[in-house]
Length: 111
Image (cartoon, rainbow, N blue to C red; front, side, top):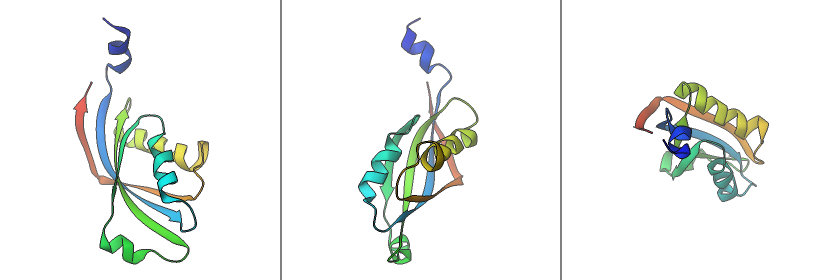
């Protein structure tokens, strides 16, 4: 068995919607790219919609992200680790809230 197969064995790919609140003065693309760089995050897609746009203020912006990530433990625990990484461990400047919508969690693949 190849080493790469051993490393990926047991990893499951999940998708979840996550609402984020950011500082309006921060570069949104920078924040999205920093989230993409978090360990186990595979894909981040930004879902812009009129409702969220209407909630933006001079101080805060809201975005809905569709995040695909690898989970090597329970999927909620893995997304919470990603949240902790983004807000605490490797704090992303300008990111104020990271709220996973657990009801949107779905398994999309296994490796």
